[in-house]
Amino acid sequence: MRLSLIIAALTVLTANLQIRNGQRSVDPLVMTLLKTTADSDFEHKSRFFQALNQLARRTGNSPHDLTNYDSGEDSQSGRARAILTRGRAVSLVSGQLQFVIVILGTNPFGVPGVEAQRILLLDSRGNVRDQLSCEINTRYGRLITESPAQPQDDNAQIVIRFVSTTPSGWHNWHTINYGGQSQTFRVLGNSDPVDLTSRGLVRLAVRDGKFRVIFPDLTDRKNSPKRLMEHVNKLKPKGLTYVSSDGARWVRIMPVSQTCVESRLEIRKRRGLLLRRSFASPDCEHGMAVERGAWTSDARFFVFNAQSTGGHQPWHWPIYFYSRSDNQLHNLDKYIGPIVAPEFRLTGPHTIETKVLETGNDAGRPIKVDLKRIGKQAARP
Image 1: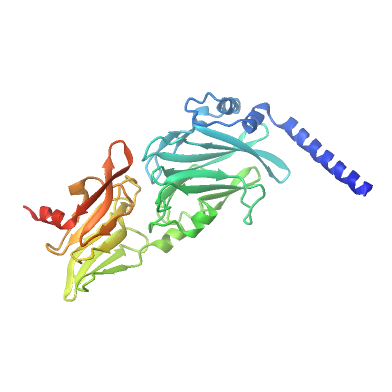
Image 2: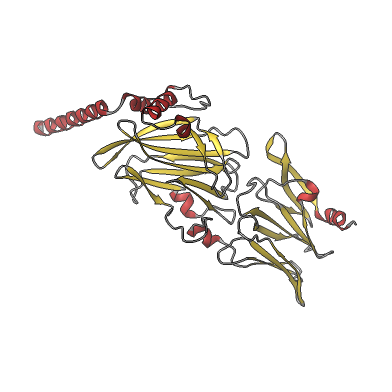
């Protein structure tokens, strides 16, 4: 009994000595990062950012570049910039080496806006060994970075996750900046696939003093510069058909090709084609992908919404409707203004509920529209 107590005491003493020795080898400025945090520090006057800026200057890095997010000109979601105003740091061991993970983030103050996380890998002397950033649009939610106490089953030590702030729990794109490359990943179908909700947007480990990106695969660039992950390919429209309640009309929505998610639409009746429309663009970056479609209960109108495939105006969700009376497609934005809701609701025989852009109201103004009345307005010369 006494022997076991002595062994336990020696074990604790050895561990404490190792910790103290490790702390003595860590640069004082790095220790400041580990002991302090920052939030809403737009001027970078907190102890945390002051220490980070001093380390940056001492090691030959630009403080501005470390503490400000810039997606770069080649970003497929459009160039985005933001001040990184949140900060914290955690220690991490890889093999026999001790590192510090600095987690920087934004305090978004508008919608749409930039929600970003930057992860810095520092050695014990404060040298920046590697870095990675991830960005989404604030319209869909926020990002958080987790550092599990133990490596995960896939050896991940750092995980960046998306946290939705909308009822749909969905985001349509995120951009990852790593190794001088900016890659945008898109999610179709109005729901996040399981691999994103369970695994996160980014999973990292530290190997040989650098980040190793476990998920997603950032090495496959054999296709076009526009990145389409495997889960996106699985969600691409495979030829959706919508039949009116009276069975007299049906709408077919298809991708324009196997490598482009932009949509083409056909409306038919029993005797043949009534209307065909393509939302494709030459570079598959400036067209539209149909997200959701539905017939009104009286079967007089087919309604669908779409999103820009190039990430342009991610807040904008244009709605189109097909009218059987004039056999034409109409853009609802033209009559009620820009639509900002990613979802719409059909009520009554032919009424649509959605939200339109309103100054000072990030969520948009709710609106109900009688499509029969709009259809008559559209038919006027």
